[in-house]
Length: 443
Image (cartoon, rainbow, N blue to C red; front, side, top):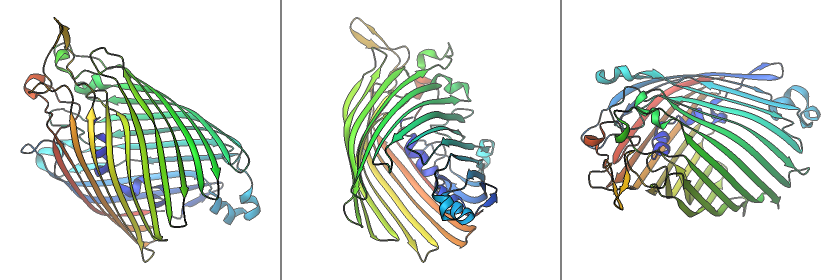
């Protein structure tokens, strides 16, 4: 989805995404530790369906999120339990499992039927995690329930799952490290209106890392992805749907990451990316990709990061998009109990070719149902994304949380709802604001 990353950023629960914040002291179960928790939050959503101006639905929301983590003991807890000598020995196995079930209750009368329960689950099993050779098996699952595009569908829920394996080989001490992996990704929509967007991806990854000096490394990364769409089509709506296509994407880059001083660090990366679309009517892309981040730590409790990046991302409309963006982040700890943070980025998005399924060449000209009323066959967007978060630790196991965020998308592209007659796969030109306040207990 073109704007899925931006809209998901506003909706994300910062504390749930950060394992260090999600977990408390933990309950020992032999060589395992258990971390249960529960969060209760009240919030407001200014634009539930990411709709253009004048067509918005707003609502208060109650969000209740039980979560549970189970893992083998980490080094600190092993040291406490077994002594420093035992903790320093190589582990034969490391295991981690996590699950959460956020329940959303919409308080607006016209949106009560949108109330639903999402799901998140993760699993990671690593053999010899501290050894020169290690092997990992992992799986990450989510059921997202909140609307990701404009109004009109009966159900916006979809399932995402990424399962993979990774082999890591390195020298003793980790000076040289090589990692090769494979991942299978799946996106499956519950509503028949989005069935044509069902897809899976085969992903292969390769990474080499060379560490030198105390905190500096050179690295090489490469990734190959093949995406296949397998959704069923409805014969009566077939010609009005946005055109999707199987595609292959390749990214390769080199970079350096290191600390210049105890207070200044820099990450630089440059490379090549391509998206090859297996449809003669849809465009391919080859482009430079890059990343440059500067991180400052004026003091131990304050971190500031600024930077720029450019990359190619998958999308339903146009198959892919390129995104150039500048970003800034700030995070600080006050008095050892209050954590505050802010993030903002501004970017320029450029999509691939956007056509309907009945598009074809006749007499040397492209004809078909117009996706955009003015005949545009691609979109260019300017996006502003910002978020803030805060947390006050009342005790080591209870906290008061707050968060807020906005996403603004500006584009001249419009989906021609009159001709399409179906819900578009992505929103266009919208503003969304959210705010949350709550409390959580975690152990």
